Amino acid sequence: MTQTHEDKTKPSRGRKNRQLGSANGMLVLFVVAMIATALVALLFGQKIGYQRGYHSSQSALSKNTDGEALSTEQVKELKRKNEILNNDVATAKQELAISLTNLDELRRIDEELKVNNRQLSQVNDVFTDFIAEKGGMPLAVIGAKIEPLPEQAFEYRFDVAMVSRDGSAKTLTPKLTLLNDDSLVEVPLEPKRYDINGVARIRGRFMMPDGFKPLQIKLNLKANGQSVEQIYDWSLGKSIENMPLSLEELPEVDENPVEPE
Image 1 (cartoon, rainbow, N blue to C red):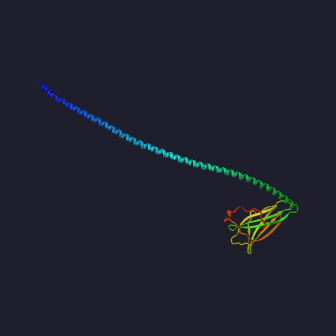
Image 2: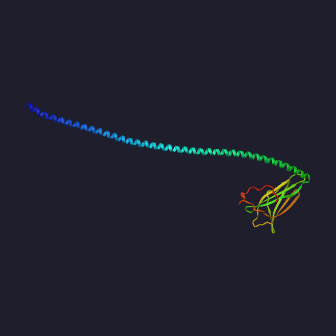
Image 3: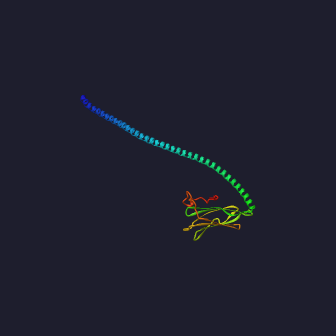
């Protein structure tokens, strides 16, 4: 009986050992699988992280490079503008120096002209007084000229001389008339009166009436009880070179003395 019991017990322990070994094997496989999965996940995560970090660093580097290039261009542009400003300042200084030099020269010339005018005025007063003491100088035209201008305009210039017996200035009243065979046209003068004590210069411009062709021009002068009438044949003389196309382009009336022809 004892032997029979022992025979029944041995197979039961063997099955338990096999079951335990199988469970241990599955546990080992499970642990190995978990470890393998963790390693794969770790490696995959490291790869993704590396790629993201690489792209991020490359993007940052690219942005940084573009920023440095833009800054360089800005610096170049600032340098260029600075050079332009420096050149402008240097040019302005040169122009200022030239202007100051010209201004000094103009002041010197102006002062010389003032001195010359005072000297001429002194000489004129001496001769005027001398002529007055000798009985004066009668009213006379010493220079006359009419020149054509653009737009049917004309410029007249008459130099008139007179010295009274008392040596004082007198009022001169001129009158200018255009004449042809059929009619006459009086030219409006401005100013209408002049002071004369030596030489008076009658200057001005007028517009020729449409269709009127003068043959003569008559100048009447009155001063200090004297009257003078001078008639000139209408002649324009030589054509003026480089005549402007408009009256607006012309300078003021010529104040120079009329030169004898």
